[in-house]
Image (cartoon, rainbow, N blue to C red; front, side, top):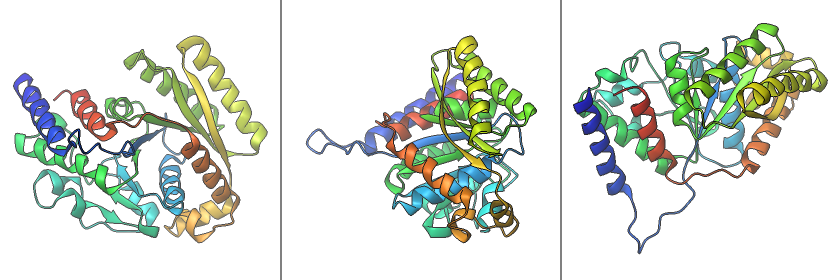
Amino acid sequence: MMDQAKRLRELMRQRAYATAYTPDEPKSVMTARVIAVASGKGGVGKSNFATNLAIQIRKLGKRVVIIDADFGLANVEILLGVTPKHSVMDVLNGNVDMEVALTTGPLGCMFLSGGSGMSALSDLTDSQIARLTDGFLRLDDLTDFIIIDTRAGLSNAVINFIKAAAETIVVTTPDPTAIADAYALIKSVKTSMPEMQQLQMVVNCAINDIEAQEVFEKLNGVSTRFLGIKLILLGCIPYDSFLVRAVRKQQPVSIIFPYAQSTMRFSNICAKLLEMQVEKKNSIQNFVLKLIGRFGI
């Protein structure tokens, strides 16, 4: 394993240098922004939020790629109503390049299907490592935003994706168990990343803004006091029958019901997110290095 780790880092350095600009040709600071979307439990609308956030980003003219990291369940492609021809396994096995593996969804929003593989990154061969590294590095030229839809819960894979991403949005609902599990997720992140000081948050399926604010204040209070993590409320998404209808139709509510209340909230959250100033220097290279390193390769 140690030899493989050394080989991986060397491969990564080689590819990073190969894609770097010379001092006479400075690379633009506008690199892809990597955002992980996570939740402490399933059923809180995490994947729905991730897909609609991506759609709203795309509506603003930005290029966006969703990485379906909930391997084997294919939630993103179901919510987008698109059947992919390829998955990340095709990239790993050398069947196609990353550009071909990406599936184009509504409004040109792209996504990478997780398929049923990549459950054991530590078993990757040198060739697969090189393909995965090259593939993710190429995303820097293909997109402005990478939205990672993680698996629900507190698995090591979820924490590893959060560690690798530059930003994380925690999705919860007012349900007491969802709140408790969201706090458990935040606590796990802090345990694994003592340096973590801030996370973003979205409250889904709230009755109204007052209820959402109460949920936020409760979670932010205990997170700040006991964990030293400040939460930033990006917004709330009310229960919306149009959103339910959209899910059943396997189409994003942001597209088929553009004036629905939930669509307007997705739009507001997207606008707030894009207004935030974040450090994006070498974000793709850092993401790949951190991700594969976190999985213990």
